[in-house]
Image (cartoon, rainbow, N blue to C red):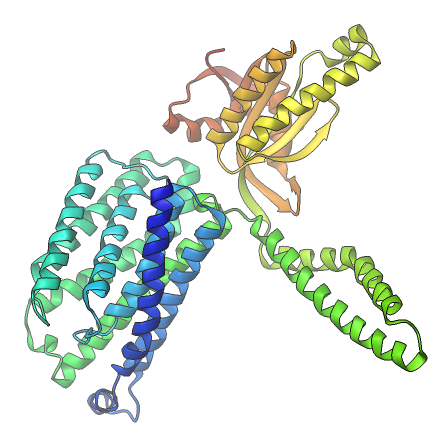
Length: 499
């Protein structure tokens, strides 16, 4: 993991530096002569395709930089760093290859980053969205594509000022299409309903990039008059395909960002809106404190009061305003970013707590309850669970992933047993409303009803949870269909096998 993080820092730093150095040269490639030829070919006083090329290229680059930064902020495990690095080098790749036949800036470092982006984009298709090679043959293709990219990089560096990489490009396209096929197979045969909902729009973006990249690589191979960039028709064709490609990459970046923010894709949940809210509150109060301090000190100088006293008064006024300002900003943020997220909801409590409390007495029961709470909170912290509520001997916590919630439930059960107590636990996976620290919605009520169906030392899960954890090898037993108080219909119930 240390080597992975070190590699991320080196590659990300090189990507940003190359991007900053290449952007001015990239913008100057749209020369006045080129603009004049395009305007003449279209019979217009300006060159719209060249303008669109600049706008689309910069927008696509910016969107992928934002995706990379978002992933680095919220997910720093191995797969999160891989996807974040892919986004960063993709941003560089767009800047380097957006203008056809004009990428003069490419030197050894530029070529290395371009081929790294090429490799990571295909590897991402083999691994997306959970970091596993699905289907199994994609692992072998990933290794083969790595060596294919190494061959292409060697030819690019040793092939002179304008190396012919047509064969390498066609091979890369073939590997890319195999990655698209892997995604189609995963979506149709492997993904559960939640994962399909998360990746649906990203799949459309992948389709757009596939079409645009295929056109960009395949049509120049035909060597027709349209592909000769020295002619007006060839110039228009080159600019049009470049704009279409940049637009498709921009679309993919937008769909990926939307899926992460709205559908909890890659574990990027809507608790981001809490960060935005507190960030805005901090900025507003800092400005208010500075203004009040300056104004109070000016008044103090006129009236002859001590400046320290006026500063203390200003600080107290800002502190008193914190809660109402925070609540107001949070409500605005919640309206702009709908506070809904897919969460794994865990409910657990002690079986027979009333009888145990009567047997032990108030003092001993209070001590036992404190020990129990300490033991439950340890696995919650370890597995990244958020403690939503605690009432008596019961806990309500939320997790980003069902498998993690189930593993936490197993450890809670073992720790509770070690105390000589029996617990019952339920895990349900569903969409909830997230407002600050509070989690609410019908799925919270469903999860609370499920825990009442569990036997002593049993962990029950809903059908939605079962479909998500089955791919991770977690085995369950069918406990039949049950009615839930206040919830219409009958619900399948499953219990984790093994004790």
